[in-house]
Image (cartoon, rainbow, N blue to C red):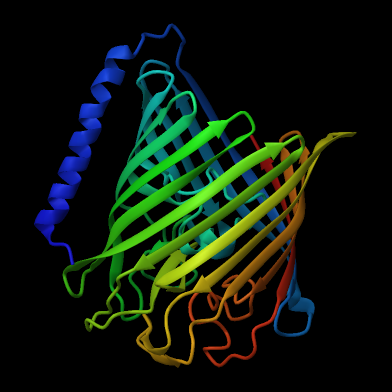
Length: 409
């Protein structure tokens, strides 16, 4: 457990080291004659859905829904302070929230500072996937995660370094359709729910990537805290990853391996094997320890079919193995389980095509999952104990065919 004094000292020395490191870059900064520019854009997206889950296909297995609409504002200000902002609305889930919103300053061509709600530098960025669904790390808060804090990016001839401190997750929107606990947000974070009044605090990230002509490979380290409002107590959480993003002609490959762990306690002081994480207003239980391996393969093919200019063929595979050990485990919802081995594994495989036609991008995805929290009739079951451990039945592949049509401007 880390006390308040230790936490304050960590934050003080982290900020002090960043400020000191900025002086030489500030002295090298040059005035720019470029004029500031403002761009206001957004997107409108629809989903066409056909599901084949635990039950037989019926009239309720298909749907045509509005996925999201969003507003984007980018103020590019060379030599001054810029802005990048995005707000999203999800009618299906009855919620809306900020995805990102930061102020930025470029000290020179190689060094940038961002302040606000910005992407966490961890693993393959901006995405560790090619499809509309992302990969399994997203569903445990480790892909395209956005939090509120400070990030410094510095590039050399062959390296990109990212250093970041996040005081807390991004602000939540209203979870009107489902649940409570501040889970109305874009990216998954630990949320207070059930018998676990936990929130994320004081997260530090370091990411380094060696860059070459056809891609990069690198490693990431993340360390943060979980604060229990019931116990008035800070405990630790961590994650690390190794990744690569390599191009060869029209081919791209994205391998990544990560491991994460959390020291979490419920409101009665018992150690937990799950915590609640939430996004889109819907919380579910996630294992406190696991490793995840992912592999994305893609092939880009240029075409001239009327407005269609490119087809991206891809397959993104993810495997998650929970490492919570055998014995009696305490869950964040207040229940407990006795395990002979460990929680069930989770598999996600997405095969699809991205079709580009000017401002319209359409994903054709066949999403398959075992113990996947979204690919099931029992939403949220998967990246924690799993179907079999909860007595729902033998784990099996569930399938969803999804077409996402988006107009971006």
